[in-house]
Amino acid sequence: MQARGAGPVTAGLPCGHAGLLPGAMWQTLSLLLRKLGVEFAMRDKGDRWELTARWVAKGFRWVRRTPLHPQWFVSSDQDSRRRHLHRLSGTVLDIGCSDRALESQLPSGCCYLGLDHYVTARAFYDTRPDVFGDACKLPLRDDCMDGVMVFEVLEHVPDPQAALSEIARVMRPGGVLLLSVPFMYPIHNAPYDFHRFTRHALLHALQEHGFTVEVINPRLRSMEVGGLILSLALGDVGRRIICRYRWALPVLPLLGLLVCLVNVSAWMLARLLPGSDFMPGGYEVVAVRNP
Image (cartoon, rainbow, N blue to C red; front, side):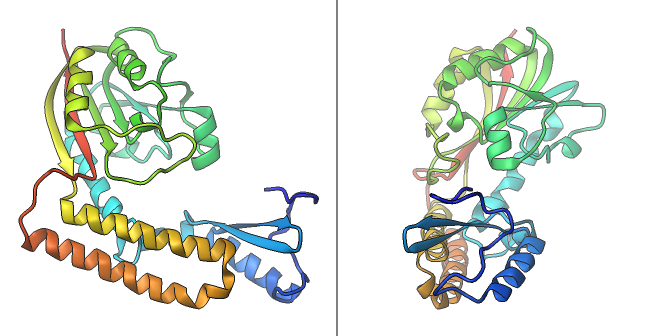
């Protein structure tokens, strides 16, 4: 990130600025945070300095599996996408493969092909798929895939109907499509977040493009979704404090406790109280390509 009116910041946090920590302390803090995988940069806005942080730090990934993290419900729900992987065989295309985490989860004998869009792969994940491509114009021949995985991708495609048409084109008859999409979830990976899909929209679109839907399940219970949204809102407050309102940093431990309380309370209420599927976190789908 480049400061306005200044050159790029290449040595971590800047040193010796009035009102900030002494230079030696900034250097020490920068080194420590880099060791933990946290990326920091500074932006100059006249007399004001703004601190921005990327909270996808490798050193803190373990927290995602605990109620202390605003996305605790998302992390626990991600395991659900693996429950249908046994349906796959032959050559399997992973659209939006990110870090290729599912490659090792496929049944033995599967041939994995990871595809991602160049812009998002480099901007958000810094990963290298087998193929760079656009889901709306897959660089593959007709009827070449036995299975396709499209997890948390369709909402980022400007034309999801075109993407489903392309998926149907490259799949062999009888091939299995595994798909998941969010529903009640904030904007993410902006500006590449375009859509949310209801159960009815998914059924209609898949049937229109030649698929038979065998499974379409809601993800997360209503109480869990409510807890997730509130936890994410608290997490956003914490991010804003780190980025712009550092005088409020002492509040962060309180926010962490609130996130934990909200997550645990929502988890318990979801199991004690009846609920319905009117407010799901998203959907998981298993569909088969028609002959």
